[in-house]
Length: 338
Image 1 (spheres, rainbow, N blue to C red):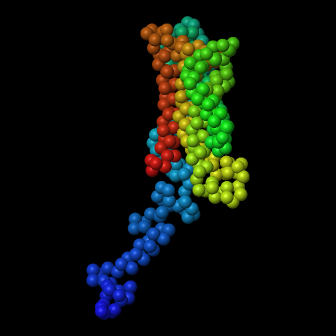
Image 2: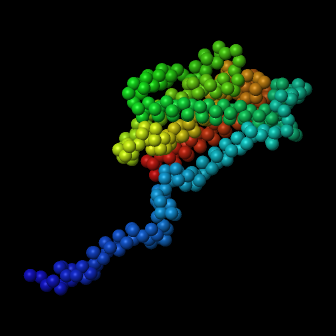
Image 3: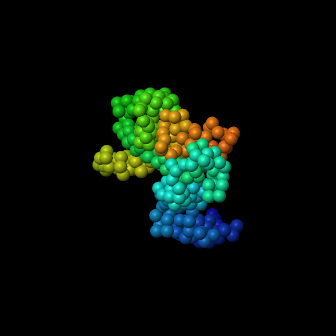
């Protein structure tokens, strides 16, 4: 028999073994370190790490983690500043453009950049700089309103289909298949060409009509995934109704993919409006639009390239800003990338 008083065998757990290490004591020390809210060798508390608990001891949500990532992302900051600038000049273009976009002087037709007229003049003698500034209003309005309408319609229809299933889900799936078979640009050429006039709200309505199926399909898949989660099952077992389940539990956890798709689609819708206006079926004069100005400049690209360069550059920067913003939001909201 072994001596119970010999260290490292059957004696007091507090004794050290022959290696000079107390296994029980080491485990207790590790447990104490893990349980301490601020017990890290580097001195950083748990809540300072991504996904950890917050300062009040509560775990951070997905949205809090996403915001922490976004505000440290230079791509997001750059695109957000550019979009903020576009929104400001869309609401108050007079802050940086003192002239009227419809005030023209035929005597200065096709003149290049000059003092006080940084971008030169177009074929009608209108100041290109002023028209570029005022053109942001139409593009941003169409993009924001069309995206909001498509996101709301798609989220409601797709969310209901994914939550309830059955015949409603089957009907919506067949309808979305039909809409997906219609190229959006070709649909715009057909639908808008038969209308006597196209206004901003006409173009917005067309984009919402053909844009909601994409959002609906994304929302449907996200809702189907969210409603199978354990917390939804537990809430249903506790007696929560369908409305409470949908609003309080399913929708907040299924809206992230919709936000990502809508943010990226916003830039696409701005480019679509410019394309339709360029082809002559979208916005029409006297509305000021980048697409209209690009169309008017196409015939003077050799003699007056500044007519095309500035509105096309403004359109490209705007679309790029929204696409960059969408990519940054997607990376921040995707848990797989953490």
